[in-house]
Amino acid sequence: MEQVLAGKRALVTGGTKGIGKATVLALARAGARVTTCYTADSEAAEQTIRELKEFGDEHQVVRADVTDVADAARLVEHARAAFGAIDILVNNVGVDGVVQFEDLGPKEWIRVMEHNVTSVYLVTHAATQGALVDGGSVVVVGSSVALRGRAKGVHYTTSKAALVGFTRALAKDLGERGIRVNLIAPGLTETEPGAGLPAHMVERIVAMTALKRLGQPEDVAGAVLFLAGDTSRFVSGATLNVDGGV
Figure 1 (tube, rainbow, N blue to C red):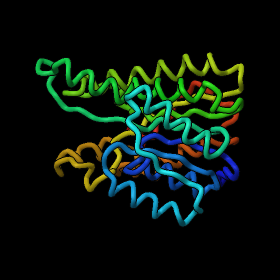
Figure 2 (cartoon, rainbow, N blue to C red):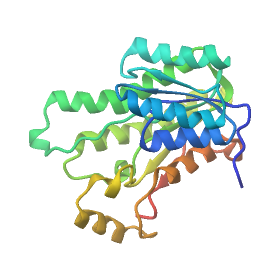
Figure 3 (cartoon, rainbow, N blue to C red):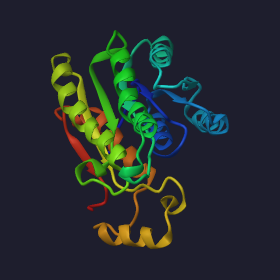
């Protein structure tokens, strides 16, 4: 079933690269009006703007640091001012980190937590202050490592596991307003050739995957569309694995 989101108003954080960009384009293609943001890569932002033009002129790409309280609120206000309200919120911003636990210092721990957890709280909290409509949908992009852990990734795994609890609890807080909150847990996704990994590691991961390939950003975007639309109207507090069957 093709997801139809005509007339819906969406806010996607971190929507100029990888999974975020695929999600932004998929939402626009399905008929939603989209606001998204970027932090520093203006070239990627300009490319996203050009690609969104294919789906109309109402979409907007805003520069915002969603780990900052004021910037997160300003981003939400941009979306509300442009479209009147927000029907769909996709919390996609996140960073990775690879470091042995003994070498994991406070600065790196805080960096990952701010981007992967605090940003989700800040944007979602701001959206619930009058922008996110009753009956809306919040989708959080987590990671399947939250359920199995990853070597040299205690901080990353912890941040993604926190989002599972955030999703479950927030679904209960917002349920009386008819707002659904769900999490997508992607496996390794090829946002660059070979997912930026050595060939032998890619081969090992593919061998562990039931579908025998890496994920593509569009695979995750398809799951976002499902959770954003009315076909999932009785799904809330769920974690949807999009990992090819690892």
